[in-house]
Length: 153
Image (cartoon, one colour):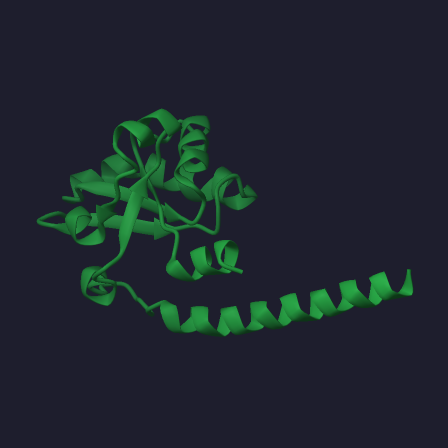
């Protein structure tokens, strides 16, 4: 019993240590942006997946969209969220953008895009629940850091 507890304790310390190292690496992965930042220049290789059903993913061969394609010859409002189904994001954040889409379009904005790190299927279901699919385009970004952290331990 004591050896199992010690073994678990050592595993937890190792996991926490790995997470600290991964977090430090992650801080180098992301670029700082501010209003007016040229996102395509700041993140030239970023590709996003549109929120969709599994069947839509299969039929599109799980295609991704380069960030530069989303912005090419267009004016875009882009906002990020910590995740789908979070309280404030569901009750206020997305609904406020949805409510103001017509005002954005009147000012020459071509599309409003939400980016989150949920999978595209969760984002799709969430957008449907919020009745925001037609107003706000939802995209998913899964960074190489997160892929490494979760799948290559």
